[in-house]
Length: 382
Image 1: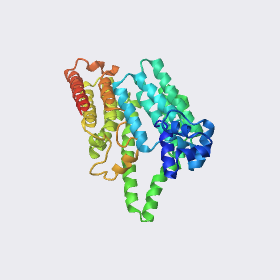
Image 2 (image 1 turned 60 degrees about the vertical axis):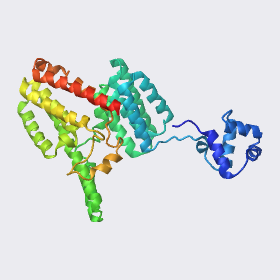
Image 3 (image 1 turned 120 degrees about the vertical axis):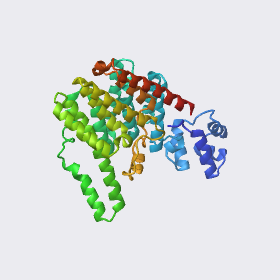
Image 4 (image 1 turned 180 degrees about the vertical axis):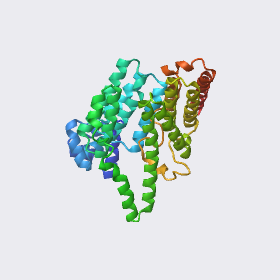
């Protein structure tokens, strides 16, 4: 929210109405000098005069004051990305104070509060210790509860239910997550067929362009979902090599077919990382190193490229507008420097202790650190 612009607004509204300071003063029952002081910011009108002034100019009190309780999508993105960038270069507590400040300013702008919840969730791990991290997560939980209690927009509430469950999971409250999501996450829910019905309806109505875009978006999401589910699947079956090997074989085919390394490096990188962990746990060092190499290549490809990191390609030609309409418009929800740091930290997972003496593993990490420094230096110089 910008600072209140009462002085400027009184001047503008008075000029629009083509009246003098004296005429305005006569209407509200004050002296011409009082109006002059309002317009030069030497004083403010008595709060009891605000309804009268708003009525005279035929505006709301919010419009008179210049108060905007809601933000545009572009404003929300700009504030979020600025705060996310601040986490990468400023002390955590200083940035959190600014987050808390804008939270209070826009406490009724529920789409923005949803984004702030995501900001807390994406950066809580930067807090100094576990106790402080828990406090930040509880702030996020409070925002979710506020949105669900007061927001009337169904789509925001539905997204917040899932976001709240993600916060609860980080707080270790698994049973509460199950209670809140078990029904809506039902894989045989009729609601999951809505996409197919929509495509058929678009075709029947002759809206083929919409049918095309809608189908591409859902195909893209389903491919990413398949990889995401497979990541969880090999984690669940880490003690069953046969299931893991077959899952990895199938996902690698999908990754190559859809060129996921370039289309959405983050999604496939997470799968390859989990695969490397699984192979380490099985003592298969060579395979673990190979998949860490693939993980690193996907993340580097994602982070080194300029501009947006989420986009379409020569096959998914209809994604660009849809991606731009999302909360972050194709930009990552965390600053790239923080993502670089998290990739470096990924090499410190305890399971990789068996690779600590491997030259290839050490070289990968060293090169990653060097590339991270070069990329971050380049961005600071731009």
